[in-house]
Length: 282
Image (cartoon, rainbow, N blue to C red; front, side):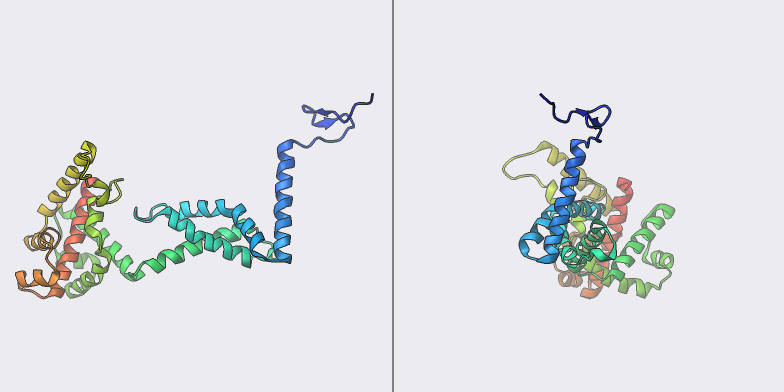
């Protein structure tokens, strides 16, 4: 009885003298051949079924890119939302990919996925980029001054540090109010992994000792930061966040315009953020 081809694993050849191909390598060849055939099918007849199979195959790329983009974003940004945006980028990449250009699909797709995610993030942000950039610059300037002076800098000192006039700084405060919609919530969680103020509030139906301690620590840090504000800034923060007065009502209390109260509120929030960052060492 004649034996069939026998594979010698150590030597990598069979008894007929032919090179033996490892099973995992053969599987890789099969996958590559299957994807190549799927691309050819899609090129010949770009129907939804073949497109969906390509999307399913390359879906891990979306998760990878979304994870990279999501690093460093605010905690309220859900990576799941980034993945959803990235899927649209992947579909667009599949439909527009031209293999004749000699570019690997993975490289091309990752660019399109990243672009789709960033476009979606920008569309959700109602604050102009220039204002965002100025806000970061002002926060860094306030941190530098605070470290140098060992106290909260005045408006005049901050304006000098930024190289602008006092009136221009106050106009800038008016622009920054757009970026402070949820600023107090962010302040409580500054430098922490707790996420947001909502995450620190105790459940009315079940008392969690750890949550209570965290909430108390957050409130203590916030109280310490508020205590270092100027008297007028303290009044604005207290009336707006703790007494629930509107900016117009606060203006009547202080005898100033609603616009001026808005400037004071923005300034107070910036100073609180700087103080809390300093306290937490972030």
